[in-house]
Length: 421
Ligand code: OGA
Ligand code: NI
Image (cartoon, rainbow, N blue to C red; front, side, top):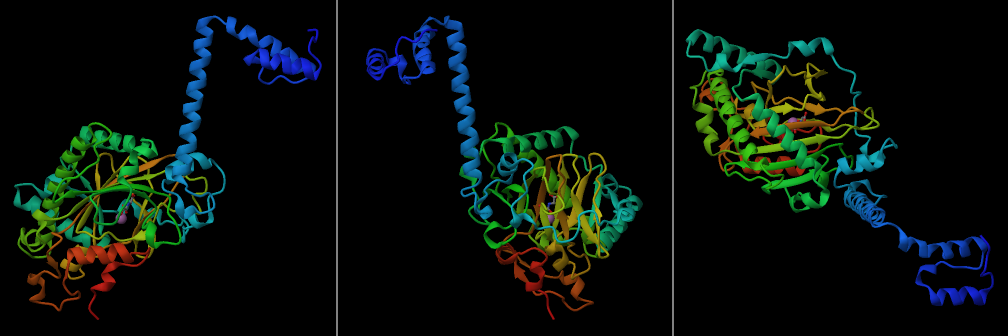
């Protein structure tokens, strides 16, 4: 194209005459550009609409990526400001992780795999059987599982596969909500009804953990996020079914200690007790040999019932070695907590467990901690103290829970606070 406007005066003339020639300058190229601009107005309407929509969509995507990343990380220099490891992992890709996430202390693959199949399996339908012999032999199995492992797989628990799938699907949807949508649930302390956050105990830790969580108090009163639609209803059903299973297990455990079936339920005020419904999300981690999802810890309640989305990662410490917990299809993973160790006067230990990571799959676990009434004094069952000395002093569950949440660093059990001698 022949350049007709190649002097400064001509260019300014063009600029004042035509808005489209905004970027006009006195080079041949830009003159051509300026001259060709008016043709844009002749673009057929469908193309124009397409271009316009494309532009709007791109702006929305860019805005959402930028705001998610800034929300996830208030400052790139300070990993403690990461408010969602999921959002961070998505923006970080396969780049090295911040050094404060180098929190794996014992290699994740140093596991005693031959022990994995020794994790006890309890058939729940046998525990609730009306046949006294079947029931008694299951109570006996329960005693061994709690005394030797503190972990067992529970089959035939009666919670439908459909319900378990639905609650898992909604849990995934919750974590997939944009960060802005979850901001209203930001963690404001251990006894707040609904809290969304990241890591283990973000306020109290120097090292961080590759996990996002939603934690909800679902008993004695039911709370739950109002989104995504339908989650609350499904979660209510799941929470109550789990509570029923935990209650039956506690009856069996009571019997296994030589107490009346209702003894632990009554002494702990279980029927007005606490339930915390935790939804953990562990994004794939590019350096799974450096980071850990959850450090070794024990749970504070009586019984924890866990299910996961088919991706492994839970390990239990058994006779000094880490063992992978490989669930059977549709089972629940059960472990005993600190309060049961106290009630059983040390017979049923609250065992250390942790969550390790992988670099391919997102793992989700639903962890329902079932505890006593917050206002009950909890200590060794009186029936046991007829024949033995107490190993723990009594403490209100509320106080125990608060101490444990405020001072609970990895590796340290809250039980140290109430242990006698
Ligand atoms: C917990 C826990 C393990 C897991 O939330 O207390 O131990 O596999 N979770 O998510
Ligand atoms: Ni736990």
